[in-house]
Image (cartoon, rainbow, N blue to C red; front, side, top):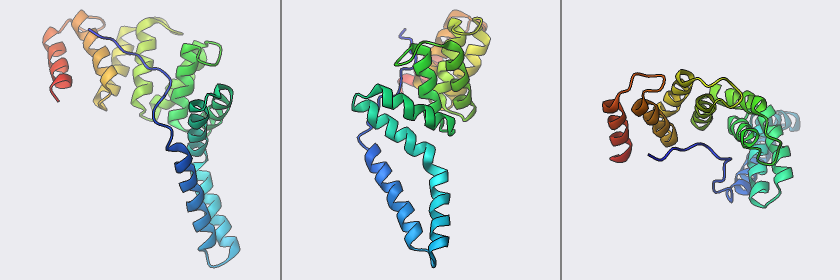
Length: 190
């Protein structure tokens, strides 16, 4: 059976500059369409405050795709501190893997827990992996299963694989080959 864990996000980030341009256009429209300049600035400030962390995250992804890992990490850190769950997850994974930063399981756990609390399924899966393998914590298959289950309920395929593995081998759960087969079939025949 193939077991998966997460790697830092490497999706199609060519759309990131367009997303930033769209955000800038929305802010400009809000500022220009108000009846007076002060109201326009207030509307623009409100939009900016709600989207700064997302814009920082998108900018960071674009910089990483361009090969500038140092700038990627700087913007990722800002976005994570601003509450962007994707940035928190990616920063946690970077610390867990030592990708561009010194490996630090305590920091990885901190950022992954924040993202997981925001219902980020990939972060929940990565937390499960860390608990299963004792990375920064004592190995705890029951806690790993809890995180995998949360992510699997959101349709995360790697979490389903990892939960399937725990069921198949009776780790932290009674061995349940029938449940493992059910999970496998649900995943395979969709």
